[in-house]
Image (cartoon, rainbow, N blue to C red):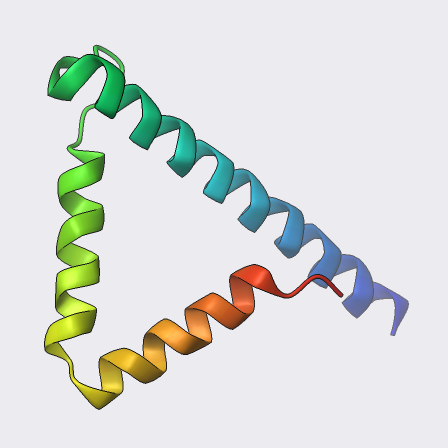
Length: 76
């Protein structure tokens, strides 16, 4: 059981790191525009399209958004 807890803890840290990088990329793109040299993708555009596709999904999109929210805000 200790191995499973260790893997879950590692995955939580990787997820937190990914969310932090995503937030940094959004801030950099807002400040410097789409011409940020080391960002090869349009982060804000991709994030907007993901949110739009969740909205277009109707009830399924709402459920997916609720699951994503609960996963990202769960502290324990």
